[in-house]
Length: 285
Image 1 (cartoon, one colour):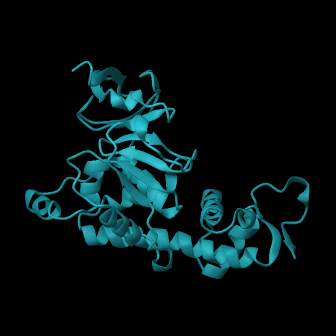
Image 2: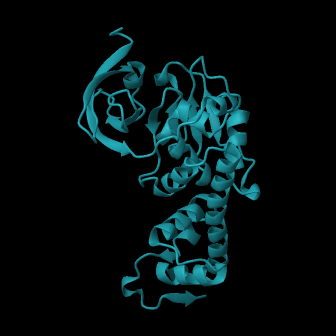
Image 3: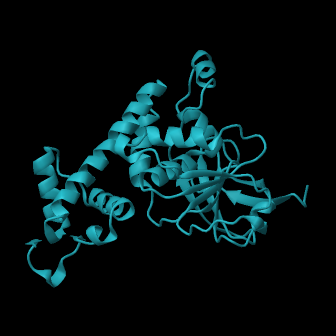
């Protein structure tokens, strides 16, 4: 047991309950990644809270983060139907809340995903990519971005993509290539999890993500005609042209990152969040 697992004493960052958990030793044997994120579900340490533990490759805990989302309870009749297919609740059961937030983020912002699967994992790359494409607008779907790896020894993994998201089917997260918190994904997932019907869940996910892509596409039409534009001016134009309430500065950051990841970093850099000495808000070519 001691050779296969490492014992970590973790403390719930919400209530302070402490408990030892067993983590596979192979997780810490690898040297390719830095801090590893371990998802701790409800009842693993305390009965009410789930959270993330940040652990280095020596098994030293470096920090915690709260997960304030929960999956709504379902009746036994609904649960029986739900278990027949791969749906959002089943995916959360497999990958954890933070894992799903990261997978959604990866799909939206076009990060490659590598999932190290165990022998019990029964789903294919095709299935996972198909489900991932379902949340995207049709013209952005079709590319394979999720890859399954069979390699049991993590040290032998050959992942060339430094900007890849890497996790395993035991809810351990080895690499997240972004630094920002997943605020957008958390907001929409919170709303989605209030819905029991899985078809309605998918519709809401599609709608929220589609709205972001529409704003990104409109922003590109603006950027094609300008040298630079301030965030405040972009907010004004998006609100006026798309007939929507004024978006927040965080939304502009999402649009900028989406353009950077899916179109052109040069175009994205035309959006100026702080103008300083640049003078006018809006300079045409």
